[in-house]
Length: 483
Image (spheres, helix red, strand yellow):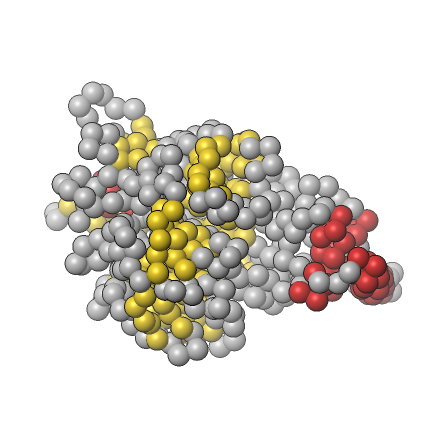
């Protein structure tokens, strides 16, 4: 196990979006927009173009887009004619500028944002990972539990109920997870009662069973896993257990689902753990921030670099504006990456262990210009929160700890929404329960499932610890989903 400072940092790890491959369904108008933008910009950006439209030739595609657009505009005109009540103004899109097509896209009926309770998990969980499955269900796995160790459960949004699924081959926490192109889920690395892990296993949603697969060449935890366009998975960095000190690592490995084996790939320029990793529209992978720990020093990072799968090499890019770790990363529809919050090091007198501060900042990375810019301000510090891309292009940040750990600190129930079109944050309705280090997953209908987490942090006669774990779950309705 690691020292308490490291443990406390790891408690603050927010849910990374690496494994979140859920995509909200297209409505007819957005299909028309996707068909036109796909050729107009000569790139898919973050839009997921339906296969039939993506494979049409240019004249056929434009004709189809025009027909669908006519129906979309006609339907909107009918709904908004003077004799009918308004169904609400069109929702803003995350693109850089508006267009005639965007103005023709109807939105769902406006509703006030709200949270509602849904079925509870069988086990209270903290630090678990949620992976959306291809059939719309959500797998929540791993982490720590207050009963009988980590669990694996599946949530069905059609019934609002959880079902226990096969147990992992090796219970673990602080691991990586990614959904493969064939729908199976890869879980790898992590920490366990037996120590740091190099093992990996696969979950098959059709059978509900876990099977062991090839192990990595290096034991590690607090690494990142990113699904690449060719179906392989890149695992990078993490804390490497080599001797008395647990240094951060710079090595990276590739998992090939076809062979079930791992092979080394190029190492990062900077050793890091608790960092963010995001697949960019170009097919390259951005890695930024994190924590660097070695035999003598331990500090957050501002550096960033990009992995090119074609060459298996890393190239430095511009540094972040703030050196932070355990942030969240969200790929916006514009192709830019939103990085929120994190922890940073506070200056302390010599020979005194550094204290950690909590950032309230948000930065945007533009891979085209290779530049970072500050965007909005959460208005308060947050750690252990989740960040989820909503179906309308905005980003929901929920829960976490909204002040440094001094005495007993309850988890927050507050939430905020980032609007990429304005670069600002706005408050939204609070969760039913305060929670930190929980999971958050976008469902096919546009709702967000939030589950598990810790009640708060505190101290008693036995020293620092967790106030308790939650098994409850709730759903966020942004007011713009299909519901």
